[in-house]
Length: 481
Image 1 (tube, helix red, strand yellow):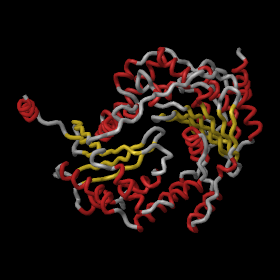
Image 2 (image 1 turned 60 degrees about the horizontal axis):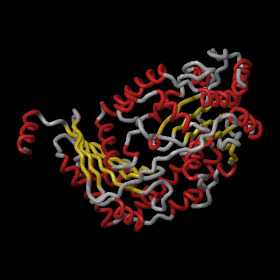
Image 3 (image 1 turned 60 degrees about the vertical axis):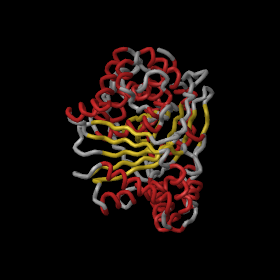
């Protein structure tokens, strides 16, 4: 037995858990409990335009000798601990096979040297905890929400799979099939999935953000064990990881435990990043996707700045006004007033290297997609040319402020905030800084960013249409000759 697995084996033994399999006996439900005191204080501050209390002010941050970053926020107001392990690698970091980052999210639950398949999740679930993971274009995150007494177990289980993960042909084949089925259900068999995948590929012509996080089917089908092992050794190294813990724990003993558990994790000498940048767009791009959908769909997207850009808040306000729910301009105009769409929505999507402002709409039965597109683009142009009202901006800003505070209502959501900000910016932006940036947005700012970024020349349009019947297709092909 090696020294780095003894703490886990000892802890499992004390809990009455077999070294390779468990039937945990203690189950204590974990609730997502809101940090009510802070939220009430923050809500009061928003109502009076006063300073906003920020629990993150008490955050402790350090690095182990191997570069492993630790972020701790001790908060004893609820008996819940949120644990998140952030890997600074997502689908944008894939260099050969696409989908490998997401594939690893699955493989991390398939067992390691000392823990059998799915036992990690079983140990957490049987104690009333919650465990899951997700992959994006920028990061992969593994997270658990547990009661305080389960925190030592969670730390050792995470260290175990990061140190001793099983990456072999059997595990790969098992998860390959799972991912391919997930891709079929979420993307290939849905008109929205097909449309958005085509839109991202159109907007980011060269940047790896154009690739879906789940990967292209042919790559997932062909990825090798050797490629998986290389990705794990490169990006799951200590100096590419951030552990965030928020909630009911004691900082000093928890940090000592983390040093014992993760201090032996190897460091990567180099962590490569894809050097490709966003290619400037100099003309509209269009694409039609044929799919057996009952109604045609319209997608539109534009290049926007990455997260942290000074125009971010103005773009957020513009998104709220144009496409943020049923009171938005697009929804009111297309769905209520003109009655040519069944829905209309969108968002400003910001990531580490680039952003995208996108919106979509579904045509009502009998409405030509050309009619819907013309009305859709007219609403964009009306903001770029005529601007927005003070009332629209004030309402959008208030909605954004409330949403910002509500997003940190649980230890889990607070941990997500700390992890994302530390990985993206190397610091946690204070709530007061973010609120002030929102409050500073003016109607002129909204008009400016829409006119600057949502241009005709920078527009990308995807239409999801029913495939043409064979006679029409043959006729068009004959004419093309």
